[in-house]
Image 1 (cartoon, rainbow, N blue to C red):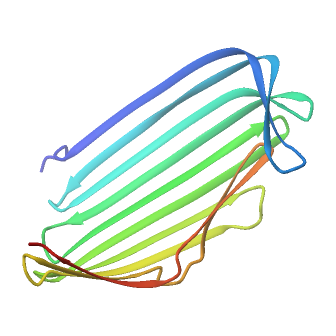
Image 2 (cartoon, rainbow, N blue to C red; image 1 turned 45 degrees about the horizontal axis):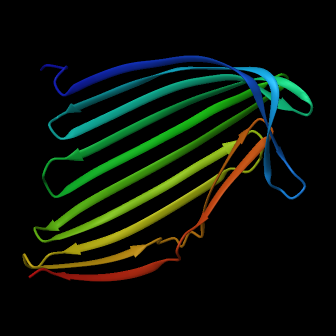
Image 3 (cartoon, rainbow, N blue to C red; image 1 turned 90 degrees about the vertical axis):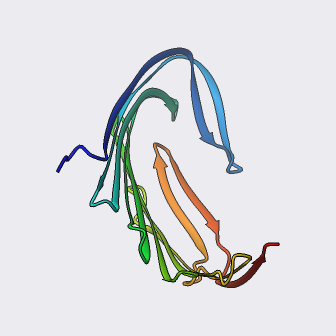
Length: 226
């Protein structure tokens, strides 16, 4: 067999170096708002990295995708009345797997892992976050399909002892009794997850992202085409 069949590989890189006569200072004021000040101080910004992408199909039904990206940013910051050299390193891994043989089921799985390090003199912060998504379609008959969806995330930072974990599960049923009629029923947020929360840190800032989800609900839909 030809191992290069359904095989694709790409590698690309980037590099830039810029100089400026201004340095930005980001601080929280007494009211909790972020205030950005411009200070007349020479500054340089260096950015470099690369991306590796690979995809391969096999057995006529499987397809895999893998992406690895690395990036480093070096610049100067003003914090606590002193100028600091800062280095921000970021890495990410994306993986995807799909199975579609044209039979009674299809499967798709995706995962994304981001991890990075922010460094200044005498200080280092580590962040990581993992996203996962799974979709399974089961065709019980020619006119009926069941869909199962799963999403999860796991985020942590060295600045906090708490690890943010989130799970969202959905279930749907699709029925097409004729060419003109479509019926669907969905049960979303089965575990009644209230919030999706992720946390990350950068130097003197801790970012907490949280958004609310709709409560567990059941929906029923009917579509008729003339």
